[in-house]
Length: 256
Image (cartoon, rainbow, N blue to C red; front, side, top):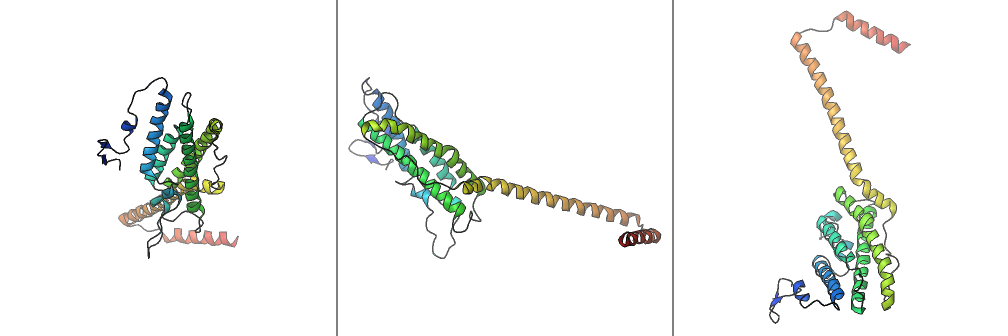
């Protein structure tokens, strides 16, 4: 609806500029600063994901008669990863700064912190299912590099930022009788994360090994071809005496 025009107000719905209209005073300066950050977060988040990040948490059901698609083509797509990064950054910006605290802003921070927890749980559930589901590993058609990026995002960005937000916001929200969960809850087993992190490296090593093996075989074939061409060009053959001597020496070595 952001592109739909509100006939009464003569502007588009969910317009952040409309929300920030008014005069800034020393009394409302902190509130308006927080409102701008929180409005950006809410509007962007609503464009990307549903209420509990179901788009990431589980893949859509497979169509009848068709095999299930890999997670990197459904719920762990590249565009979801980029959107999750941006949503996390906007959510982290919603922490209260000095002079911004009140009942309303505290309720908004509580909602943003719970959203961060829900996002972490959704990603953890999706990675656990993809890396250690019924098949015992990633889908054969999954993008290993993209899975590695999801694992890095989860361990290096999502978990640390969510824990920091819970820790720093809890002390502030206690003053307003608002309480946050102390733990995220969902987690990805360490061995599965390691599998996802090294999946692309193993794939690259396998490709490099196959290329090297093919190169060696090609070099041997070229060497053999060169010898055959040289012999055919000179028209020479190995002398019988040399061939006989070689065979006798080989027989003696075998007897020894």
